Amino acid sequence: MPWDQHKDSESADIRARLDHPVIDGDGHMVEYQPMVYEYVEKVAGRAVADRMRDKLEGGEGGSDAGRAGWYACTQEERDDMRVYRPPFFMAPSKNTADRATAMLPALFRKRLDEFGIDFAIVYTSTFRLQKLRDDELRQAGCRALNLMLTELFAPYADRMTPAAVIPMITPEEAIAELEYAVGTLGMKAAMTTAYVPRAVPRIAREAPELAAYAQWIDPLALGSPFDYDPLWAKCMELKVAPTAHSTGFFGARASTISYVYNHIGNFGAAGEAFCKALVIGGVTGRFPDLKFGFLEGGVGWACALYNDLFEHWQKRNATAMNENLHPRNIDKVLFAELVEAYGGKQFARHLDTMREDGGERRHDETGANLDEWHNCSATSMEELRDLFIPNFYFGCEADDRMVATAFNPKLNRFGAKLKAIFSSDVGHWDVPDMAEVLAESYEMVTEELITEDDFRDFTFSNAAELHASMNPDFFKGTVVEADVAKLMAGKAAEAAV
Image (tube, rainbow, N blue to C red; front, side, top):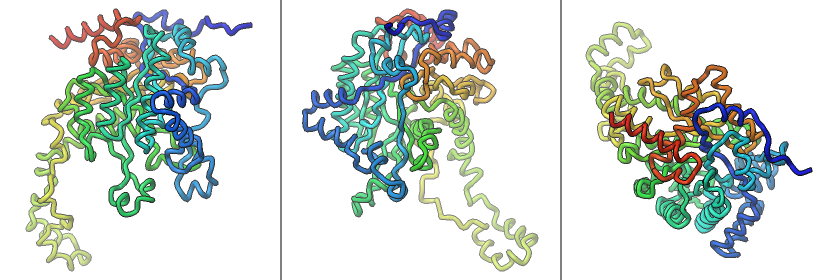
């Protein structure tokens, strides 16, 4: 008996009751790896495809080898080289139809109504290609994925669109692939990374064999050796919102034993590194109309960051630093009198020195730039808010109850609501049943964690705004075209007032 493709579901029932469409801001395809190699061969030749296969499956150590490197080592070797426990059992298998759906766009398209989803933006599951150290393999791999995704999803453009995979090691390679993906292939969404791991320069110069083990995290917008502003300008020109989709397997999240330990919070850690760099580094000030997405990490970290930025700006902007923290403000005479009166024997022997330094034994900062916000254009709390809220969107999975924090005006400064986006994450291990995702998200409404209006923003308005505000034609020809046009017209009217 053939598998029944037309199933009723609670998610479909919920969608039928809504007065708005549902946009999946972050669905996933699980690529068939041999097909990826075929496309690599198509764009770069057989030799490159063979090298790609050897790199990803050949069992070499180090981060490029990923799964193979970990499995090729003993636990002692993993600890010795700090080879972290990689992802495993990543795709659903309990439901064979779901497993096939994640791989077959035609089946994915056919089942969207069952999932309660009107339109899906679909991302690759092959993240590793963006991070390969080999320039030729990285660039060929991303191009191959983009060509493959374009061809696979082209027949289903009314309900689905794939996101281009953009290599980010340098802004030049990112611009080149973005131009190809948008200009040649006609792609509309772009998956960037949130950071680039780079070798510590001195180690790379003096001990290059150790460079892979001595890296720092470049968040692209603050302290980078490269200027990524041309890339952000190109995104504006091509009308594409960069959506960062990076794991944060670094620092404390590099256990050699537990993938679960590594995974918890890792997308959020990557997103936070990038997001705060964009604000402090002044990118949102220089590109006020550029929208950024941070996917799979949820929004809990973003609410914490949003509020924490205010606390740091209040206490550590240049004016506040000079008024409240600069050592020259200390009245050394009064300080010495207080030490003499209340210090007792323990401080008596230091009294002469303390008369001179006022108890301040730190480095002299007079030659340094004390204003760490100098790249950020904010001169008030309100301006700082406006460098964050309008620009950022946060992909949240169905079982993430921290979504409620985004819609809590009592929690977030100025009564702000952060722009959380419904992200099904179908195709990954955390979705054992694709048909339950929307229903799982709706539990936040039934449990009164968020309102119906919040749910509308979560499942429709925010995702639509992220892409349509950059590209008014993003949803043209899709089943949600009219609804998005009405939404954006309403937002334009509100802005005009």
